[in-house]
Length: 213
Image (cartoon, rainbow, N blue to C red; front, top):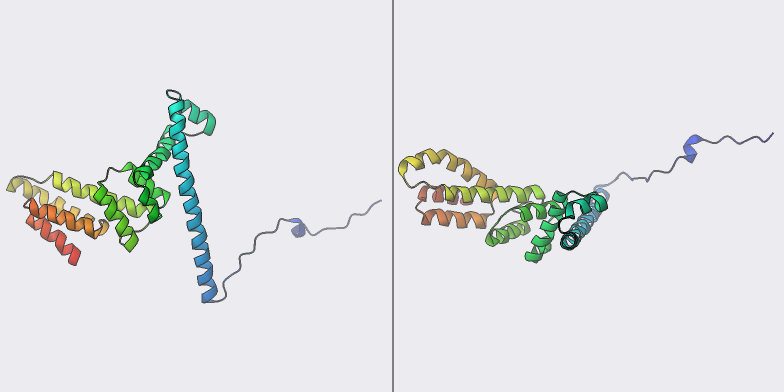
């Protein structure tokens, strides 16, 4: 009778990649830099492919007019909303090709593509990202967009009489805090100038105070 040699079960398990534990500060720092670069490279590839998918989906939509949703589901197991997100990003980048130079993550591009922002504001956002005023993240860009919309709403709601202004003052206080925290300084300066021109000197002064505070 053939006798089988006993084997250690641990020896036949698939090997797990060994992650060395950093022994020195220099080793840990170098490893972090390397991993961050790898993640950023992956993010760039994901962003590029998402844009390409959006462009191709726009082509598919032209050929499958009236059947687009069914085709998406059958061919890609994809919803119309997801396809619209891809196409929206592709269209946004086509209109604003220099946004790629800022290396925005895909989530930030989605936010900008969905928002209705003025070209001047987009320039302010790109400048603020480059100088570090706005984090280069989807959340950072979304907060800047929300602050810009708050600024637009304040302008639209400017009351023409003193009674209306009194009711509006508390909302203005909250809006100023939001603008200060999330709007690029260049946009804040433009908004303060707009308020001064409109006669809202108190709000303009508050905004200027936040820029110098």
